[in-house]
Length: 418
Image (cartoon, rainbow, N blue to C red; front, side, top):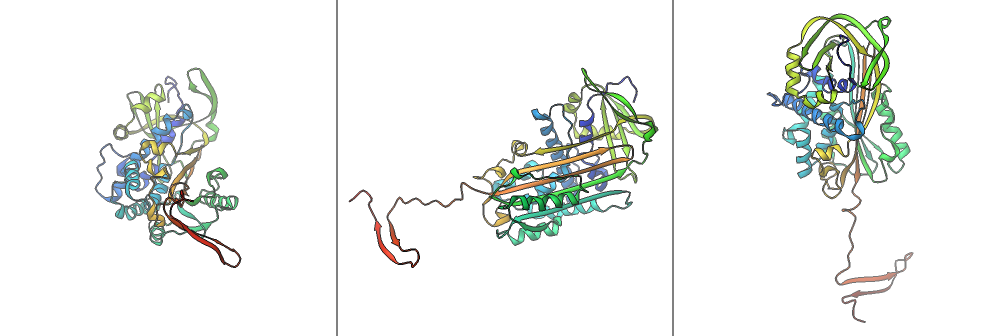
């Protein structure tokens, strides 16, 4: 890039650019994001369009949270959608309707999981084997607790989600088992997804998704060309970072207010789309739409470009307990309203936490990314406690515990009378 352009905190944009990298593998015709009015014709297209729409909305929600102002952002919306898709499979009533609306699951619930399975199958079916991609699901239920066989069978068939039992009354052991599984599935990049405070004695089920990707650039950067260079975080804050450089032929275009660059990974199934604003990144993000990015990508042309791209590596962790209800799926998080009777046969579970952790490492060789999502479901502690209200005639007895002998017995028909 020429030195005349202001370098703003573009690391947030990398998170945006990678929001739908899996879609580029399985559904390259849909582009980096879903269109504002999806031109979906198959159930798989509908799933992808819905997932991408949710990705945009969740990204914006996270971006606007006060604690994230000025921070790097990175997440795997596919991981989050998949973990919540498994949870959605057991939802009923208003809870299911709200989840479907927020997650943009527009296919009837009875047909949804097989359609989602078809999307996942196309994503993990790699032809060139030039990159590593692993997606895994698992359910972790409280031992000796009842779960509907139909639900477990649906998850196993459509999400390849194995069911294992743990004991949340021994949280250290339970979390060790779950976290070790996540760590294995993400090549040791996501560690300690769940913390001790995330579960308690009422936890009955944790649904997990893990995703791992590693790919080399189609045209790697020469480490000898990497030099320390200034990076303008804000107009008054400049930091020195290692800047990778190379000159080569890439898909590139200049649009009003930004430059667009596409860097392919080996095999060209995947690419990183970099959107570099001329000015403030917040202004750019506020005006971004799915249709606009589709339009920009259609303008990309292969040409010689001098590329300067920072090396970066960071980890993010999000609790989505506030963002998801604010988007419209509040019932799932309320003990009094949640209906996940498809999981247990009763309305006795609610979502306590949705936890997401992700990492990204971009260097001269390529990129490595991993993420994991956990949906923590607790038993309801309020509305489903037995209620014993002796406000009408009753019988009583005094008995000897060891023998069971009835020593006294009687009834109360009017407690006000002597």
